[in-house]
Length: 195
Image (cartoon, rainbow, N blue to C red; front, side, top):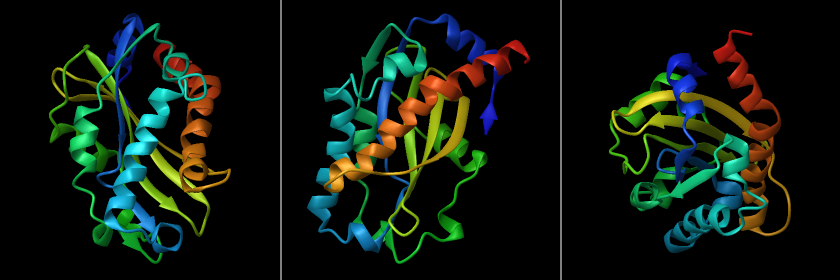
């Protein structure tokens, strides 16, 4: 986990933030569960992103991050996700080279050009969806959009659940938003307060 207490304290003072979406451009998937044609995989990547916007009661970005005003701009993740190729992201098992560090996530942020709608933006970066362990590994990333400084990046591992590929892995995001709202966000606030 990387945490910039000074920038996060400033982030807390802003009433508005931009949700950039779910970035799958660095993700790995196990062949078991994701052996899909290219167009089907692209469909699911888009669908998981639209699910968060279309069902804001279930996937509540505003409540989770304590922001009364939420802007949405998926242009960056849409462009990034279009680069995902089935042959590059599928493997039999999630191997150690598919595991990211704080530094790797920060490097990904620094090399990106975000739309600057509000001073701060946030997105999820999927590391892996592993059908063997039944876990989705996702980084929560908050950035200062103007200068691409990382405010926060932390890895979470959540279980999928439900019926159908879309809903089954979509549950990972539901569980993640719940965790952020109930536990992670108060913990981050306490880090700013030095507790």
